[in-house]
Image 1: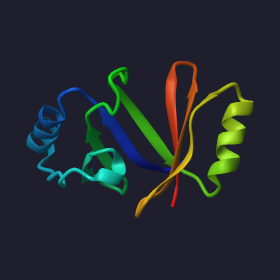
Image 2: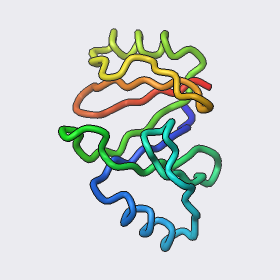
Image 3: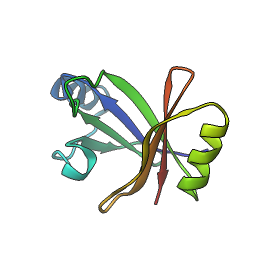
Image 4: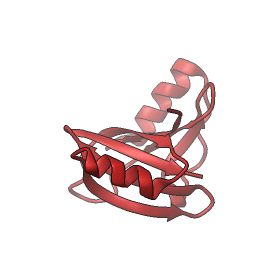
Length: 114
């Protein structure tokens, strides 16, 4: 299992970015429209931290990990077989790959295929 993208959805993305920049000395990029306006920073050991505002009025704050998979369709099918509920079917993000989200046991589980 390799974490590729760690997504923070928060009503105050600037404050969260400032906190992590101050704690760890990381620099966040400008908002990326392909990632829902997330500001991103590289994680030590690989992977990306993305911090963004909610995309809908009813989107709640969440910390959502996305794990790399070789076959996103198969990963989603296995997660649904295990009792998960498909929240976001595989969706291409231009320049970033394909992501999907499954909800299981109250946890958002993201998958990412490059």
